[in-house]
Length: 153
Image (cartoon, rainbow, N blue to C red):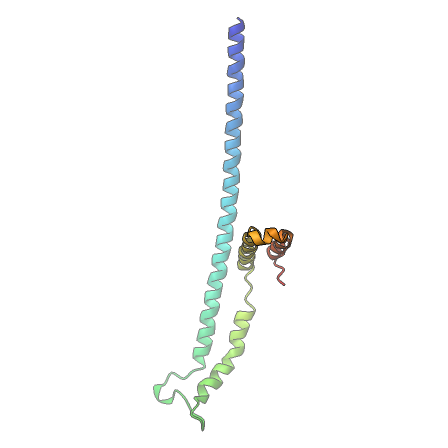
């Protein structure tokens, strides 16, 4: 009976180990799914900002085109020096609209993505032997943290 009890105990322990392994695997899958979901959301946000930038660029181009004659015979009026003044004046008039389109464009997801890329670059620099020799790793750590917060100096 002692051998049977020992075998039953071993079977019980193996079942517990299997259950624990399954639970750890499930936990890793849940974490992976959460990370994947966050990455998909970030990608969708970046794509939306990219689309908005393309629309703004097209609007800026259209605004500048609208201020330009399309009649080949009357494309420009030249000043005494031969400079095409009509085109320059019209493009200057369009500048405010173009400036408003591009300067007022907010791209927070793109900013976060670029801040992270910059911070990773600083972390790569941190690993350079010269940085370690000069004991500047803490400076790199602080700067990378500032970049991740969006603080740029």
